[in-house]
Structures are given as structure tokens and as C-alpha cells.
View 1 (cartoon, helix red, strand yellow):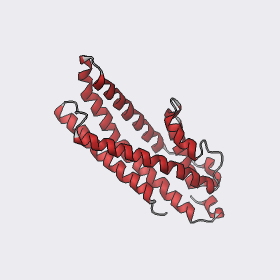
View 2: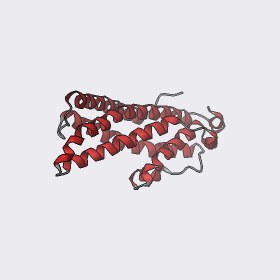
View 3: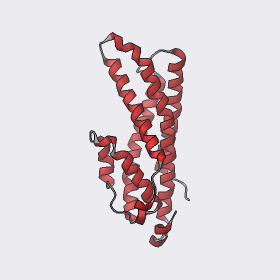
View 4: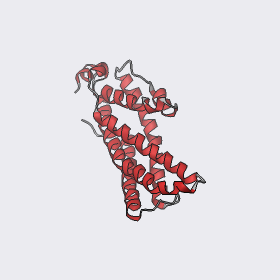
Length: 199
């Protein structure tokens, strides 16, 4: 199996930074019992790592879908453009991203017969963590901007959930991207008949 490409490695580095910062932020909230200020330096760097990882992931995802299609994968739920667009379509963005990621993983293993490959529980574990962390983050933001004083007591637990879940979720995502990209790199050097039987 080959080494992941530069784009996947960049995503992995940003995801690792995000995981480390998330863990430190969660520990800070846990030890102090106080909410974090929005301009907290660690929180700002965490946001930069998250945004950078998200942007690179969308580029990687589109390229990865194109690559498995070129290797012979057909009947995928999304092409390169829709694999990105689904992230921004309300309601559909709750189900389509993990579906696309799961199909990509399977197509990277065996493009011509990807439907015969079993799914990975790691994808649903990653996606569940992503949903929980982001819902807690949205609730945290709403509690911060709300003029109702009684919401202030929700800030520490929401911060703890958001950052606490984001840390292992980022590590899961890092592992998924690297594993899938190794398969994608291997596709580039194989003849079509070899790709069909690759495990």
C-alpha cells in the first residue's frame, strides 16, 4: 500500500492539530468550570485548523471521487461536484456526506465491484461524533449570543461536549482520510485488471 498524497497528509496534520487543541480546550473548561471567551487564543487556532481542514477536505473529496470513477467505479451516489455540494444542502447534509465517504472508501478498495465491499463502522462513528460536536457547537454559539442570562450556565457543559467530542472525532477522520488515500494512491499505479481484484 502506498504513502498518502500531500493533500491527505495536509488534512491529517490539520486534523491532528484540531484534535490536540480540542482536547486542551475541553481540559481547560473541565478544570476551570468556566466558559471560554470567543477570543481565547486556543479557540481561535482551533477555528483556523477546523476551517483549513474543511476546505482541504472538500478539494480532496472531489478529487478522490473523480479518481475512483476514472478507475472504473460506477453508480456512486455523487460525482465530484455533488460530493461537495451535499455538505451545504440542509437536511441532506445530515446523511449524504457519510454515505459518500463510505462509497468512496469501498470504491477505493475495489472500484469495479465496490458494492460487494462491506461498510466500515468507523465512518458512522466518525459521523456521529461530528454531528454531536457540531450540534453542541451551534448550541454554544446560540447560548453565547442570547440576551437571556439564564443560558450562561449552559456554556461550560456545551463547551465541554463540543470540544470533548471533537478531539476523538478529528482523530477518527484523520485515520479515515489516510486509509482511503493510501488506497487511492495505489489505484494510480495499477492496471485495470489488477484494480478489480485489489483487496
